[in-house]
Length: 426
Image 1 (cartoon, rainbow, N blue to C red):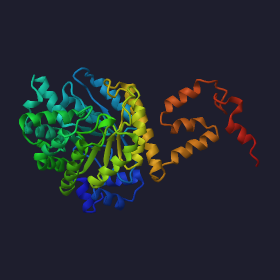
Image 2: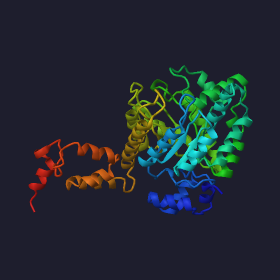
Image 3: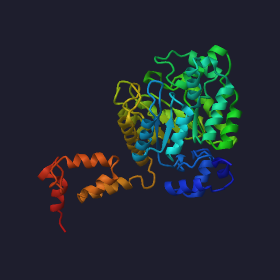
Image 4: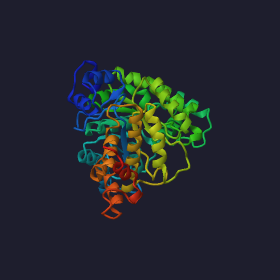
């Protein structure tokens, strides 16, 4: 049985119990949230990933995208990125590799870490065709489902599938003139294939076959936003909303089959529209967990989009989004290096933590209170230990004279905390 099917039957799986403990939620309450489709635990039965709850009343989770390309394929670098993900607190990794031996790369990633791992199967299909000198127009539905089955058997915990791009939603897309068109790789590939073949999207047409595979392996579906806006000008248009309507239908079909499902969202969205986008997804998609890329509330911050993404991500998660896909400084520019991955994770973790405080999750401010108390006591080791980047915090403090243990170099002898403590009446 899948985690969803067990929750519906009132069976507390080891994964459900582990998530209940880590999230400080009563197991019965958690099972009800899972049964209602409001929480997922991506956990392929072929692999032993860390049980991780994503959704309503759980802490906001952070995903890191990594992977090779046909221009840069260095498996050792990707494994080093996984280590960065583990060190700086990412909850999941998505392997978006398009270069090299993709099956071997995926296998090694699955073996190297217990973080939940996601993929986008159509990338593998397109990449394999490209290496054969063929185009995406040569792909068949059978090739795609064979790839999905292969990855499920390997142990992939969740898969992004762009099943909401249909003949119907394509009509809405044609009615709207976007500045940036389609920015989703999977979305653009499927659109091109559908327009060329005049056929329906196989992920939609044969959705039941997809559900069969996911139910068998307990793969969580991540319904991709192939029509997500890539510019704030294009946000919340007919194209985006038409796909979201289809995804709402697919959420119901998945949960009815006992398959866990979450929904992916924008993208580039003006700040004032972010909360409304989250509320729209929750309404149209039956409160399914919402997985957002950023979102990015401006388009002009190239090389600083991790900051832009953190601003948008904090608001989105505070408004009800459940899962933040990090954005690195390399977004829109190049493949991220190790430092980019680190900065992307830290920025998104800050956003997630801010949102958890705003949502009033139990113990969300516990770490803030520990740091505040440590600052009052000038307990620098505790400050370092609980900071989002302990190494950098320690490094910056050590750049000043070692005899400043009771103050920092910002205020020196005029340290407000030091002065206040000295003047406190017993």
